[in-house]
Amino acid sequence: MKTMAYTLLMLALSAATAAAHAQGYPARPVRLVVGFTPGGGVDINARLLASKLSEYFGQQVLVDNRPGAGTNIANEHVAKSPPDGYTLLVNTAAVAINMSLYKKLPFDTLRDFAPVSVFSMSPNILVIHPSVPVKNVKELLALARSKPGKLNFSSAGSGTTQHLSGELFKLRTKTDIVHVPYKGSAPSLTALIGGEVVVWYGVLAPANTPRDIVSTLSGAVIKATRSPDIKQRLLDQGAEPVGNTPEEFAKLLREEVAKWAEVVKVSGAKVD
Figure 1: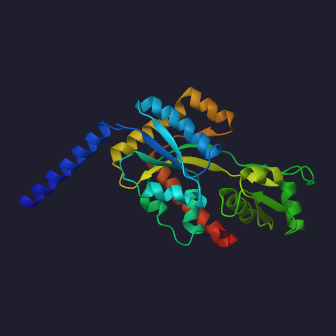
Figure 2: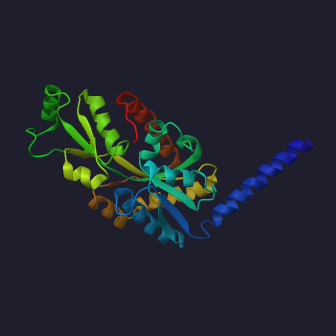
Figure 3: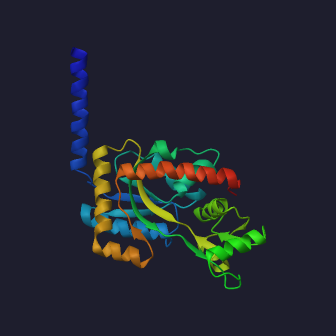
């Protein structure tokens, strides 16, 4: 009985401590770590969100750009940060894709992160060079099937979300289109034929972040996506506000890991 009473007391104290932490959160600046250089889609979304969270929290929310290794530098940094809600990750499907794209990772996406919320989502856009004699996707597929291996598609580099989205397109449509990687989104779009990914921009915290803090963060992200100014700014750049619960984001993350694992396996995609 004494052991049980002690256990119950410790559980109660832990719950009280977590609640106390959440009530005082945030008491100092929060960092949103981004695995991309400034100026890209993820960075823009992170800065929009940071400005709104700063307003809500009364504390500075800063964007910390840590590009490199297909976002794995940023991912590892956040995964190994203290689970206190002060170091968060803003990433895309890259954090799910990398699970199967890289043979060895110092983190596990499903184990080492606590999903907070998806901030926004961008629609898929397929862009075709004017010299290609097609007017729609149906005609493009017919051309690709009549000339296997003769058409090219560009991406921002091997293993990027753009590359894997192209591979997913090939897989689902059973076409043979050659991937031509470029160093970055701008050159790939300039080179055309290219496609911009269907991407989501989500916020993740280190695993074991107190549930109350995750809920506070999720609620703030959802509130931001409902605010008229953020909503309009997202729509202006072709993105759709989302704002979902940690449970909904966790489900999406599991589905994304499984989907991209299939694409990587079938396509044989490899990183440089």
